Length: 354
Image 1 (cartoon, one colour):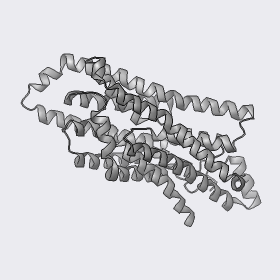
Image 2 (cartoon, one colour):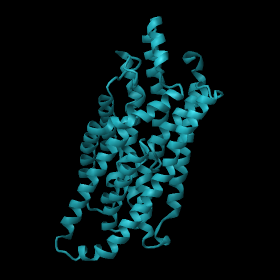
Image 3 (cartoon, one colour):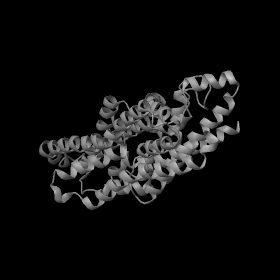
Image 4 (cartoon, helix red, strand yellow):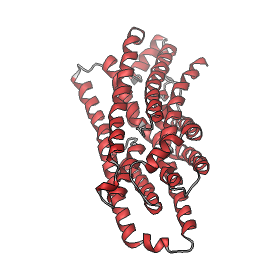
């Protein structure tokens, strides 16, 4: 039973993700003072859990493939060989330890970036950590392994560009038409404050649901055993996703305000109506990218891209590119840092896992 303590590393990853990704659902609402921070984090926590329970398991497959190709999780052949040799218990322990190392390195990276007020992507850090492990343990000299890893890495990396770019385009279009045809009329209504608050709450709840659906599996993906042969701690994908959702919710409730205010107010000057449309743009991007690519995408990149798109409607001068430059640097440095840290740990423990 003590092996289940190794889940703590995954839960730390989820907590770190929650401290960072809360901003993506209600950052603009809190920054524009439409919704109180206390109310926002309660709604986020509940909807993250619902999203994790209903659809969180769907995103686990791509991460499992990347994990197997980089020697983080065991292949079916390795598991069957361990069963025949009577060493399944040892294999299970090593699988859990590798998962703990991946999540500890990625989670530490996300936590540090969050403390520095950079809304980085937890998924990027996880991918970087997996690649760092693979560079030490996977047989990259094998053309088949190299091709498979490069293909998957390009798929993940492509979302790092397409996600914020797509969000910026969608948000720009939505805000442009909102300003042209809706905003002026809406702000003259006597019930404007009530309407905008309800809109923020609904959009934020949907965005929170998408966070649970998109990211919860990432928290416990490497503790999941896709072979079903008992080679890792968790054999039920839904249970794994719900555990991940709970960890994210805890992060939301305890340490999310710092990044929330950075996303909500520092990238561009936006109005209350713009902020509401930004959340819609972000959520649409997450849903569309998830359906199209079939892998977890960065909610942080989606919301930053959406805020930039909204700000550009008023002109380039309305966007604080100095802040965006720092965020972009964090997007690059987080997977690199997580990968380097994981590689060093993998190198130090190579004799045990060989």
